[in-house]
Length: 136
Image (tube, rainbow, N blue to C red; front, top):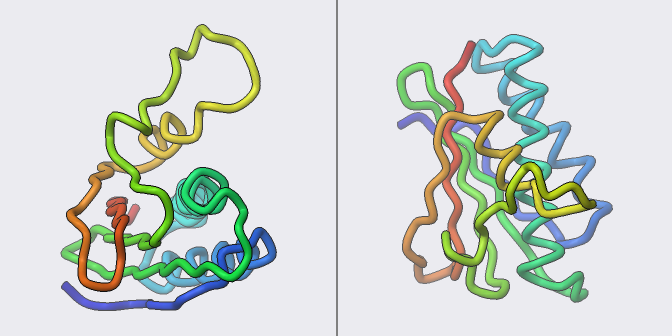
C-alpha cells in the first residue's frame, strides 16, 4: 500500500472544507476522474460529519485523522477518532422509504464507495473506519 495523504484535524465543522479539498486533490493526483473525486469527497465528508455529530457530539477540543493510501487502483481511506464507540450495529442506516430528515449518511457512503469496514481500535484511536473506492 502506498501512502498518499495523512492529516489530523480539529473535530469541528470548519475543518471539513480543508478535508474536502485534500480528498479531492488526492483522488485526482492518484488518477481519479472528477466524478470519482466528487463521489469520494461526498462519502468522506459524510463520514467525517458523523464523527463530529455522533462520535464527539460537537464537543470542542477533539481531533480526528484522515489517511489515504493507494493499493492497486483502489484508494483506501482511513478515518480515525476517539469519540463514542462506533459499531456496525449502531450505524445501521434507516429504511429508504422512511421519509424524514437525517439517517441516510451510511447509506450514501455505501452507495458512493466500494466497501466500508469498521477496523479494531489501535493504540491511538478508538474508532477506525476504512472506506475503499476504485480509482476510475
